[in-house]
Structures are given as C-alpha cells and as structure tokens.
Image (cartoon, rainbow, N blue to C red; front, side):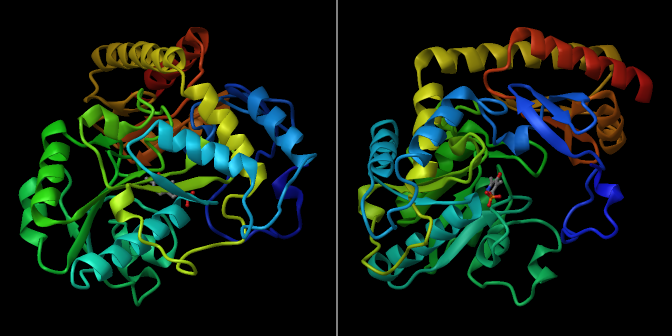
Amino acid sequence: MNARMLPTNPLMKITPRPEQVFVRGTGAYLFDSAGRVYLDWMQGWAVNCLGHAPGVVAEALSRQAATLINPSPAFYNQPALDLASWLVAHSCFDQVFFTSSGAEANEGAIKLARKWGKMHKAGAYEIISFVNGFHGRTLATMAATGKAGWDTLYAPAVPGFVKAVYNDLESVRALLGPHTVAVMLEPVQGEAGVIPADRAFMQGLRELCDAENVLLIVDEVQTGCARTGELFAYQQYGIQPDIMTLGKGIGGGVPLAVLLAREAVCCFEYGDQGGTYCGNPLMCAAGLAVMQTIGTPDFLTGVRQTSAALRAGLLNLCEQFGLEGVRGAGLLLALQLGRPLAREIVASALEEGFLLNAPRPDILRFMPALNSTAKEISQGLGMLEALLQRHL
Ligand SMILES: *Cc1c(COP(=O)(O)O)cnc(C)c1O
C-alpha cells in the first residue's frame, strides 16, 4: 500500500505529505508499510509523550473500551472524575473542563475569560496575545494566533484580539485598556521556533495582570505534561496563572485536551459550555494513565537528565559546525542553524529513517518521547551529525 498508488487522493489537501504510509509504532520508532524503521523525534508534534503505542495507554484504553465508552456528557463518569481530581491536586487550579483538542480547550479559555469580563469587569472582552504565537485552528483561536496572514485567511476574523511582542512587557502595557480581559501566551512559543518566555517577562506579566485586574492565560498545549521538565511549564516561572490549557501530551496520542481555571474564574453556568465528547471516559482513562506515569518525581528527573544529554549533544554540534545555538526547555529543544537549511535537512532525514521538524527555515525542532533512552538520544545525535556534515 502506497498513497501514490491511489488513483485520486481521497484526503483533502491540507499539508504536503511524504508518500510513506505508517503502519506500526513502538516507543521511539515508527515503521512504514515497506518495513522501514524511523527514529521519531516529532512524535506527532510532542503528542506521544510516552512514545508510540505505550503499554500503559493501550492497557487503559482496552480496559475502558470493554467497560464504558460513552455514558453521555450529561452524566458523571469515574475516569473523568479521577483525571479532574488528579489535575486539580497537582496544579494551582480548582476546576477543569475536558475537550478533544487543544484549539477547543483554548476556545473554552477565551469563552471563560469573556464570561468573567462580563460578570466582573464591566464587559471587558479584549485578549492580548502575541505576534508569532500559536493557539489553534478554530476561528477564534486563529484570531488569537499571531501567524502572518491568518487574520485574512478566513476573513472576517473573530474580533477582540490584539497582539503584543513576546518577551516585551512594555508592548503589553501599551495595549492594556478598560476592555482588556486577559493576556494569553505560550510559556515557550513552539510554532514560532521554540522561543521560551523570559522569567522576568512572565513574572512581570503576572504583576501587571494583578495590578490591572486582567486574567493570565497560559496555553500549555505543547509545554504542559512534563515536556519542559516540570509537570507544567508555569511552575518553572514561580507564578500562578488564572487559566491554563493542556492538550497534546495529556492523551499520550489520543484526542484529549483540558481547560483548567482557578476558583475565582470558574464562572460558567449551566448551558454556557459543552460538547458531545467532553470528558468521555475512554479518553479520560488514557489521560489518567499518562498523568500517573509522567507525574512522578522519578519520571520528571529522567526528563531533565535526557534533556541535559540532548542539549549537551546539540551544543557540541553547534561548536563542531559553527551553528548559532540551542534554545528551548526540557525535551522541547531547537537547533538554530543560522542559515535556511532546516527544510532540506528534514527531507533528507526522512530518507535516512529519522523524523524531524522545521518550524522555521533556519530552525530544527526536537520533540522526542519523554521516556527516550540515552541510547536513542545518542543515535539521533549521530544521525544529526551525519546530516549536518552533508548539508553544511
Ligand atoms: C498544537 C497546539 C494547539 C492546538 O492544538 P490542537 O489539538 O491541534 O487543536 C494550541 N496551542 C499550542 C501552543 C499548540 O502547540
């Protein structure tokens, strides 16, 4: 089976895909229909935090699938209650709302902030987000996103969003006004090329939001769930946000995302928010298995050690090849090539059996499984060295 053998492509044209059809995955590796093996450092865009087909997720899914898949979002179910309790116990938040995608969780965050503005801040509705930020592909989250061209792609854009400059507190201050209800940001801008927020910026935002009675929303769809070496990235900044969203890693590969908020902000009333699959026990059982696995001190220590090994190897490559540098946090790291070679390197890596991502023409992004072994990290570094040798 090969996608090119089909007479016409039955899938809509949304992204140029290579011809491989992937049929199996285990841990750090994917296999295609021709039996070729690939070391995967994309892992579904930081989704498969425990690698491909992790036993704990497969087991939780099969057990729950044989027990209860969908009682209806109008009823309680045990996995949703258990996962919500786990998240509340391990974060600064008091209540959660489950969704199926990160965009939908962010959409919920935007609604919750606007509702709070209506109730507690004289109808304030405007959200300050950031140039080059990424929050999803629904109409409202596209408006929150700071990607060039996205304001006109499906015009008219949802109103109520203005863009500040990341890591520039003054640019936020300049946009604040009586209509401002929230500031929304990623602790590490992922799609922008893996740019972490400075500690002073994040702490300054918290102070500014407190002083102005504005909510602070962190989009941790990519940075949450141990990706940066803490359970949640906000914990590295010594601040407490008012609202957080999770996605990607929490499901370990299945569609699950979460909106979390502190008690004072939880102002939805019956009928304000909902969705057919919100909190379904099948996905929540997977999420609970993931969080119980990644949430232990030993696991987090392992992520930090693996991150240090990967970072050290990347820094060596920087020195060896005269590259610009390494940035990011935990196992969300990027190599700054200093020249626009990232896309051709990604293409030859695929031929070599190595899956990489280039969010920008000069940036390679690495999102390996959080439980990657030392051997897998050195295998990837070795492949990267050979690729750089060839392309530089
Ligand atoms: C991936 C991502 C989203 C969107 O999540 P989906 O599940 O694709 O809707 C939102 N915010 C950030 C920071 C992301 O990385």
